[in-house]
Amino acid sequence: MNQKPKVIVSAPVPPDLRERLAERCDIVEVPTGQNPAEVLGADERAQIEGMVCTVRTKVDQALLDALPALKVSSNFAVGFDNVDLAAATRRKVLICNTPGVLDGAVADVTIGLMLCLSRNLVAGDAFVRSGAWTKGAFPLTRDIRGKTLGLLGMGRIGRVVARAAQAFDMKVIYHNRREDPQAEGLATYVDRDELFKTSDVLSVHIPLSAETRHSIGKRELELMKPTAYLINTARGPVIDEAALIEALRAGTIAGAGLDVMEQEPLPADSPLCALPNVVLQAHVGSATHETRRAMIDLAVANLMDALAGQKPKAMVNAEVWQARA
Ligand code: DGY
Image (cartoon, rainbow, N blue to C red):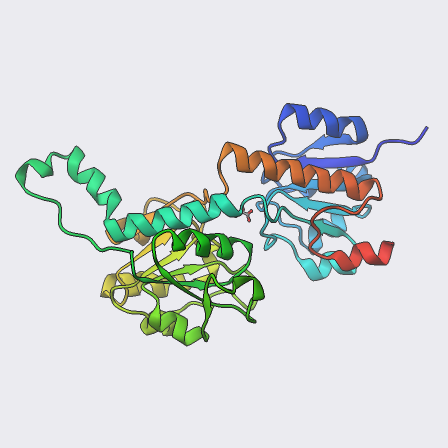
């Protein structure tokens, strides 16, 4: 009788899905975010063929060496900056992710941050609760209607944000490595500097990589209007946070809405927490019951498909799959 493949589960897999996975695989639990190389013994590690994990698991050369039989690692995330992709591809480990199912949820948080900043909604809530309203009116805020939304990165999430912005009568411009035919009629392509100079709200939708790390720094922030807002729902390290804090203190830009930061979880003593012109969220772009369920369904399906020799729906290094085929 064929043995079931051993797989690491290091992500919140709901009980019904875990049962289905257990019919096909032998599950080895690793608490979310912990390093399987530290949690499991060498004998067990040597038998692991698959893994489903969050972005808190570093799938680097050391972990790949510690899991010599690994064939597939399925990220419970669309982002895969936790993976050394070159090392995984060299080792012929297939990397899967969850694109498509979280676009709406992340776009919603982007629009929410934009409204919080332009209408000062978070301060407005505190104003009412503190009784300050009884002493005078809340200061006037700014419309987003008729303003220009700039999108750095026009992929699936950027396109949903662009569509949503149309409901607010915003003009949408974008910059991408190349023009996106699917953006036609939704947004106008501009060069990178133009994007920073012209946007009233600039929203970041690029993945984190060696090229994009700190790609928004002092220079880009100085190109922006002093009335402009910067929103990041992608990955914290694409922005040079020290430069951003400086720009927010100096009034180089008007404010920032951040769902992601360089250090997560963000400690309360971060200078960001003391800035009145910042709205912060706890990396919750995709964190709704519905979206997280769709993500874990896809992540587990990717894992099971790959181990069963069926093409997974979402692969990051599809060349590994093609080479196997
Ligand atoms: C993603 O899917 O990449 C989210 O940011 C969760 O990490």
